[in-house]
Length: 175
Figure 1 (cartoon, rainbow, N blue to C red):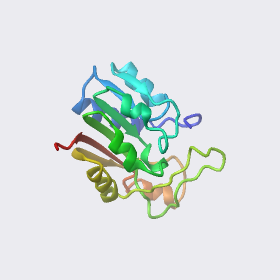
Figure 2: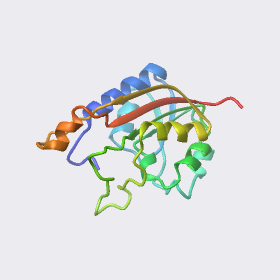
Figure 3: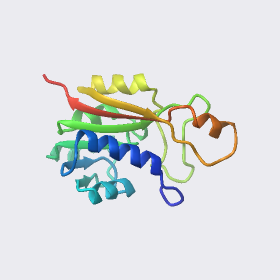
Figure 4: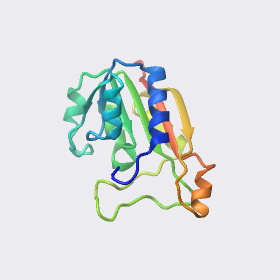
């Protein structure tokens, strides 16, 4: 997925946001297989356990067994059919998550070659807030940001001004 691109701006903003609320060292369960960002987290002093590539729509066992105090889920929930069940199954006290926001000028993303690299959900900010609330999470802080692409055209110009990512820090609601 990162063979030809490295989202430097997104990684920098996400790391700064995480460090603001949960400086290293901290134990993290990172949803998704090991990737350049989880490697960056490890190099910054976090202890990171990644999920093992299981289909999180059907296999929640690793989420339920984890003792990490923090779960991170960066660009994961848009790929799931049932993110509500995943969010409810997390055992951690804190959650950092981000989703790409629905762009009114672009269709939902679908890789033609990789069945794991497709978006089932295209979130608007209020939808993700609602999902988190319904799953038992309280948003403590959030941030939206643009992520321009180095291409020519109308859509790349619109990406200069239209927020592309929504990042949240949540804590589990008291019962």
